[in-house]
Amino acid sequence: MPSFGVSRTRWPVVAWIRLRLEAPPPPMLLMPGPPPPPEPPLEILEPNPVPTDPRRRVFAYEEDHGDWVLRLVWDTDDPLLLEIECRAPLYRQRVPPEMVGTFWTEAKRLVAPISPVEVEAADPYP
Image 1 (cartoon, rainbow, N blue to C red):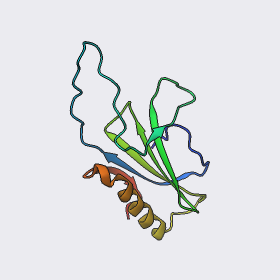
Image 2: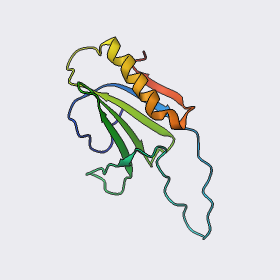
Image 3: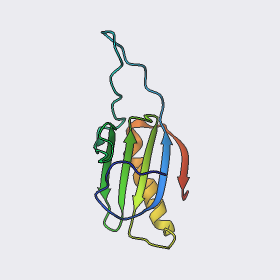
Image 4: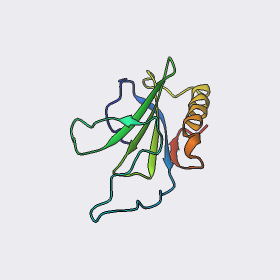
């Protein structure tokens, strides 16, 4: 699963969830021309520039939980996907089951305003 933008932490992604969002209604155009770029699905998402490609519009949100960080990432190139990462300083070891459960609970709390959403893929499942 690619990680877009720049994370504040250098910890590896130890668990992730990819959500499929509902398609938003098409924008109403008042003038001829291309439609405006899509807006992030959650208000907490902030611009997170991609240093290698300034044309890309990526939005992210990070929440520190002490020994791990929850990160939401949304890319305008694929506006129907929302990626949620769990970053922790775990190297060459499995994620503890209690951390997986807490990660999923916190992820559900953050995406509650846009529910229902479909889990397209995840690793690991609780």
